[in-house]
Length: 266
Image 1 (cartoon, rainbow, N blue to C red):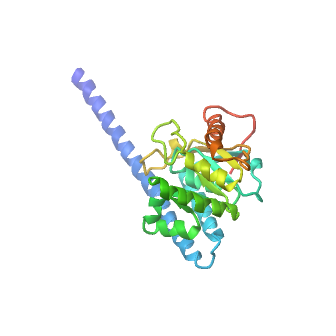
Image 2 (spheres, rainbow, N blue to C red):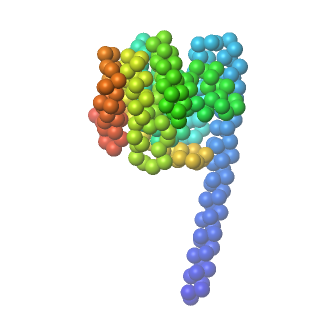
Image 3 (cartoon, rainbow, N blue to C red):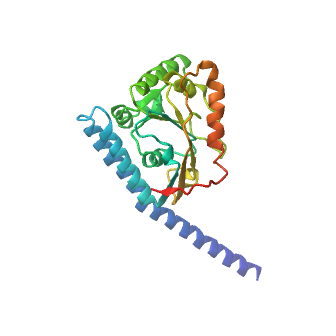
């Protein structure tokens, strides 16, 4: 009887493994592979279009198309709360937590304004990706070398003063756990130098959709909470620590709690 039960359990386990493998294969063919295709096509269109558009509007449009295709194909629902806190005519720094690589396309769709990402310098050295980032106007920052990082932040501050809103992830990299990483002071030095408001953003749900170090995208719901802007005009380098703490409190305040406002679907 024991051997019969063990045989039944083994067959059930074997069928379960086959179903899991088949499910993963189907997801790879019908979801993951199309994402690679969208990335190649939209990236090529972006780089080619940059020849005729030096301001990055075409590239930003390509990024939004790419993002919408990814979310549609992957079965990802996006809900946005607090869009009324964005003044389309005002230059700001959007400051968000960074739980997943899926944060990039989600923010392209959630934010109804032109913006550029503040990205680590090493990404700009990757063939094709680096060309796209440069031609799109995204801003490189070298975080490993304090002197080079300072120069990068100065260049970024100048771009912001010229009217370019940016998105930055003050953790500096994606968290490999469910906890937010410490914020890096350089991001807030940039805010003080540029003198524009910071708009904190809480990102929820993207970690479950695309886990760290995974290439497999799962269906699910991502939520973006856009907080009221925090002014920085008149602040000095001595205020950076307090500013960082204030932004972090805003972001954390919605990581584990709901809100009274009804988010809108995108």
